[in-house]
Image (cartoon, rainbow, N blue to C red; front, top):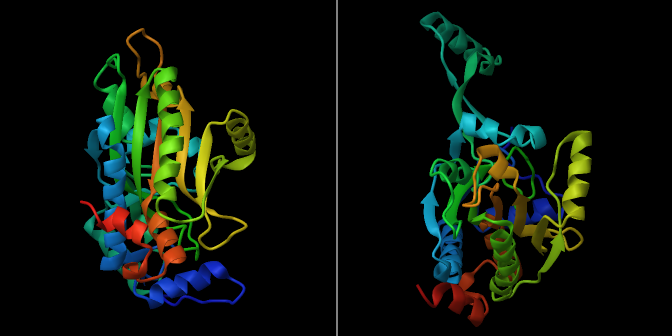
Length: 313
């Protein structure tokens, strides 16, 4: 484990990370993808979060905020482990006797592996901000005629250690989640494809929207990825941050069809399985894109960008 960022001239990801650290925006914590944030970095995230709120305020979404962890049973129900076992993060804790504790301390002092003495708890790290929404909505019973629209914001975890500062292991997602009939859900997604692009264009950064797929695991995952693309279920708004050839997904627009409606038996008033969709904003990634394209001092950013982020509260 190292707290130093090793940089190669041929590695633009590590080079940008070093710049962010040198300017005090990110604080290394000794593990790739795990960083503290400076006050300035947090201010940019908070200002962008406020801009999202203004952009979606008229929709009247119900606001929900959850801790960065979910109930293990709900996590198991979500079938996340079927598709993304390599990204999941479980929470373990010591649950032994006093003798076990002495063994743990001995292993720790001797530099041996002590983690085998930890047992899984009923808590799992949140993989995506929308995951607590579905069991919450399901407990309410049949959806009202207008369906449901939820505004959710959470820290999320994915086990993807990387020197790419835009690929953090702990990061924040702001989402709007729509639950309802296929027509309601598709209308929502189409609206946010346009609105999300307009919001990001107002930040003065280069971008494009493209068809995408999730990083499903294993051989079966390749078929799932192909099906997702063939059906146009996922689009991403891409911004070059550390690479122009492989720009970074900063927004995602996802149509889950009846997947979550089936898992939690969420029903519309006519008894049909509910469909769901979400638009997700990668908060750290948007901040990183702003620093990349406008510089490390927000006081020198273009006037329209400053007006959007700081001009109105």
